[in-house]
Length: 304
Length: 275
Image 1 (spheres, rainbow over the protein chains, first blue to last red):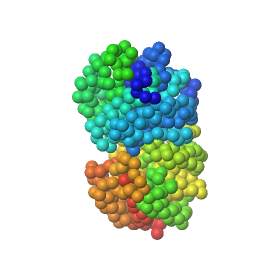
Image 2: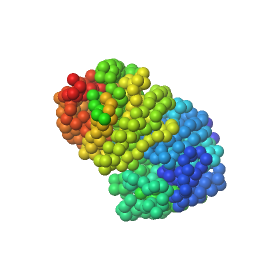
Image 3: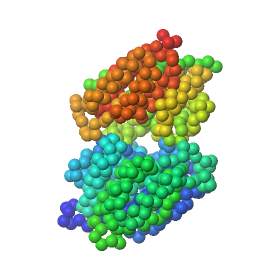
Image 4: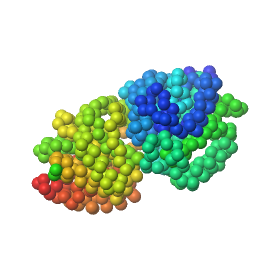
């Protein structure tokens, strides 16, 4: 598909954190483990995302997950159908999920091609036995539990950890630009999901049952203050302010956004001055999680 | 009931070794086969496994699923295909290791779940060292929040469990040395330790291993972790020190070489009582 006939655009972006507790708390049929609920604040925030997605009717949801880590390049799932059971290696007692997803392989190829144009090393993941990571699945389930929209899982190249913050973020910026161009060429209406928690220090022991919400709170006051500062910047569309404080946030709050998903998404969105909507904030085993939305249909000049 | 630690080994867990294309990879694979023969002669009842590629957050996890069978696709090198695995657990030893770990004051978790993901490192090591499924294994995770002191204590707890198991136990630390990967595609002929200073440090570490002084290997790996990327900060080396205590007489490095830029060795620790 040539650029001249492109009609593709990014219709929305979501900050879509992936604690498996959210799926566990919801008790969907796909998860073999059942709970008494819990983490409703975050789960109800995701309901607002589901309403938006239902209204926006995207053709595809792209997700960048820190739990599909790659060393050599940025990888794109390119198997038409992926199916299996994903058991979370950290919280196996909460997440044993039977997944089945349709993958937009054409868009995967376009993203890989555009990534190479940016000078990135990109690869297609074509192994049908690949077990999809829980981060990808949780974010996608919470956004669209019906799984009736094709998806495109993208790996988190570990350059932010391996090569340092600046080089890593440079990679994510390029990946975001490449993703936006690929979507434009594809003709798709696309939703982006940045599968990231904010502050990521957590407790090393969990209550029994894990959904005992009387024990759930942020691990430290400093973490909470950092989370609120970041959310406020995003709510104000202050991209310059965000970029300025992000390295300090990552260092002091062990923030998972270091893995690059948020910067990938914001880059793909063109670092919009759109005020992001906060659908909800909550903690999961001490970490800080915000569910946020960037509605790109509501803003003139949104990147298409 | 008295048990015995009859030996220990350090082995790499990268999937390239299952079908090696590089000269170093072939040497490491051959050394793996030699270590398998050495283990066979020692005839342990059980293999105790610590893999840096099985990460845990809520303390240390212990695999207690009786039978583990399936296939695994590496998240980075998925083009190498699905890696099959089929082995049984020594759940009683794994539970005893967990209990001993708890007695040291550390959180533990028993893992008994269908389709729980087995890590690439464990699969690679057992493909070489337990290919005929002769022996059960007792696998523990690498706790991401454990530092040198904690990892030594975790090893000591595993040792205590082994010594009370009534079984002959061979301990395996699955780890690379330096982990400065090439982040680009390379041909097998291009593979080498990606940094010459890393290479020198790796060889210094292996030299210390051959003396059998695990306090020194632990000290070196801690110091090197500040200068180069080391697999899980050298956690497996600290764990090995705890497991072996002061029983090590010598180490024998069977091979050392690069896999995708990282340093890897196949080595055996010869214990005083097992000579």
